[in-house]
Image 1: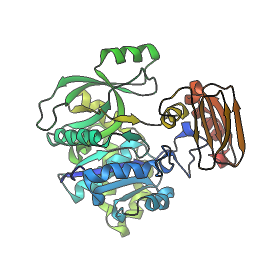
Image 2: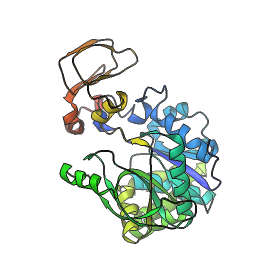
Image 3: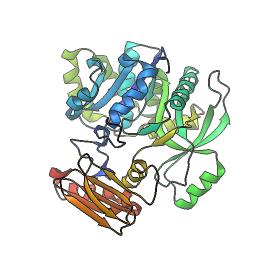
Image 4: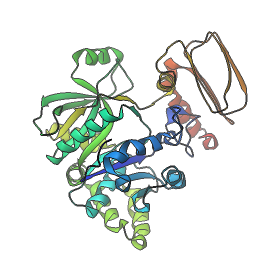
Amino acid sequence: MAEPIDDFYAVIPAGGIGSRLWPLSRADAPKFLHDLTGSGHTLLRDTWDRLEPLAGAGRIAVVTGRAHRAAVEKELPGIPDRNVILESEPRDSAAAIGLAAAILVRREPDVIIGSFAADHVIRGTQVFDWAVQQAVAVAREGYICTIGIPPTEPSVGFGYIQKGEELVVAGAPEAATVQRFVEKPDLETARGYLAERTYLWNAGMFISRADVLLGEIAENQPHLYAGLMDLAEAWDDRDLRGPVVDRVWPSLPKIAIDYAVAEPAAEKGLLAVIPGHFDWDDVGDFASLSKLVSNGRKNDLAILGENARILADASSGIVVSQTQRIISVIGMKDIVIVDTDDALLITTSEHAQRVKGVVDALKLNGRGDVL
C-alpha cells in the first residue's frame, strides 16, 4: 500500500459525456458514472480508490459540472465539500485543471497537483503508484510531467508522446524529456511508432507544481490565466464566489490543456514523461469497451448489463442492455448493440469511432431529449 505523498494533491476532472459511448453515456449519466468493468463501482469511484492511497482522502479534488454534483457526492461520500469544484458549463480541460490549480495554490503555495481523468480504466495499482511517485519527484524539480503508456498495438485512437533525452532526477529513474506531441496518426504511421519504441500513448495525466502549471497558462493563455485568478481569489468565500463565477466563467476560452500547457512546455524543454507500465484504457468507444469486458478475447460476445437477456450463437463483439428485451445475436462478427429504453444503436467495432457523428447529428436535429 502506497503512503500518502505529503505535498501532493490529486485532481479528478469529471466532465464530458463520452459521446462515442452513446446511447449508454448521456449528459445526465456520463461515462464516469457507469460501471464499465464489472467491478461493482463506477469509473469515478475506481479513480478515487486508486488515488486515495497516494494523496489521502482529504487531498483529492473533483472538478465537475453543477448538474453532476449530487451524483459525484453520492459516489464519493468522503469528499470534503470544499474539494468539489463546480463548473457552471464545460470550458475544456485547461480551464478545469487550471481552476483547481489556482484554488489549491492559494491554500498551499508549494502544492504539487496531479490530474487524472475520472473515466479511464487502470489495472496494476502498484505499478501505477510507482509511476506517480516518479512523476511527483520530477515535478519537484520544476518540470511539468506526464505519464505515457507504452503502446501495445498500432492504435489510431490515441495521441502519442515522443520521448527525448533521459533526465537525471533522484527518485525517478525512468524520467525523460518530451520531444514532441503527435496527434492521432493513421495506421501506417502508428505502426512505425510501435516499431520505433520511443513513442508512448498520451494518457492525459499531468503532474506539476501548481505554480509552474499556472505560469505556463499565464504565458500562453493570459486571458484564461486572468480569469482563473479572479475565480480563485473569490472561491473560498461563498458570498463572493457566485457573482464572480457568473461574470468570469462564461468568458474563459475553451482550450485543452495539451494545447495551452503541454505542447508549449515541450518546446521549451519543460515537459517530462514517465512511462506507465500498467494496463490503461480510456474506454474511448465500444470497440475498446468490448475488448475490456471480454479481456481481449476476440471471438467472444461481451455482455454488459445487470439484467441483460442475451441469446448468442457464433457471434462476437459486445451487447450492452439496459432493458428487459431478449436480444438474439446469430452469426455476427464484431457486432456492437446498445439497447436502452429510448434509443438503440447497432454498428460494428470497425465503425465504433463514428458513433460521435450520430450524437452530432442528433444535436443538429434538436433531439437533445435522447442526449
